[in-house]
Each structure stands twice: as structure tokens, then as C-alpha cells.
Length: 121
Image 1 (cartoon, rainbow, N blue to C red):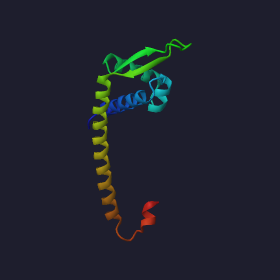
Image 2 (image 1 turned 90 degrees about the vertical axis):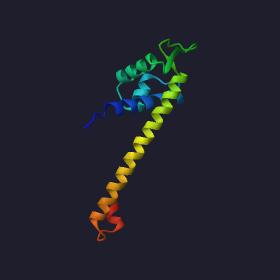
Image 3 (image 1 turned 135 degrees about the horizontal axis):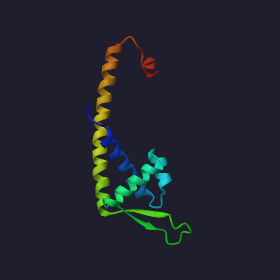
Image 4 (image 1 turned 180 degrees about the vertical axis):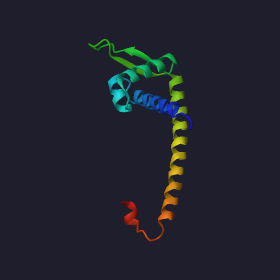
């Protein structure tokens, strides 16, 4: 059985890049809450994205809180987001097809004696 860790990391990266694209002024705490990770993990993820050149960080010019950052996707970050999106979509479509097959097999197993209402509950 292969490890799911790389897939989880891809999902976290994709969700983080999408959040940054939608709201460059998002905080690490907000990213953590939306992605479902700890603030420390969000910080690690953002640092890794910046190190890879996928995002760049800047301070708010007018902010009283000089620790507040704006996160901007670089051209490499936009390309990585597109690639991760394609990978994510392919994986989810494959999961969907697998689930559809399993559901069809279970419906056949249940037979015609069970009504649609009973199967829905």
C-alpha cells in the first residue's frame, strides 16, 4: 500500500495556492483554518512555497501590524497551481468512477427486492 502523504501534501499545497490567489492578504491562521492544518503547518507550507519560488511575500505598506504579509503567486506558482489542479481533478474523477462501480455492485447485490427509498436511507 502506497503512502498517502504525498497526495495530502499536494492537496494542502493546492488549497493554499488557491486561497492565496483568491485573497493575497490572508493570514497564516486563516489559511490553517480553511485548509484544516495547524498554524505551524501553514507556516511551514508557506515557507516551502516561498523557498520553491511559487509565492513571494511582501509587507503591507500601510499596515500598523508590520508582521502582516501579502502573499503573491509568482508565474511559477500559477503554473504549479494549474498542474496540481489537473492532478487533483484526475485523481478525484478516478475516485468517483471507483465509487460509482462499487455502488452499482452493491445495488446488484441488494437485488430488486429493495425499493429505491430503502436504498437511499
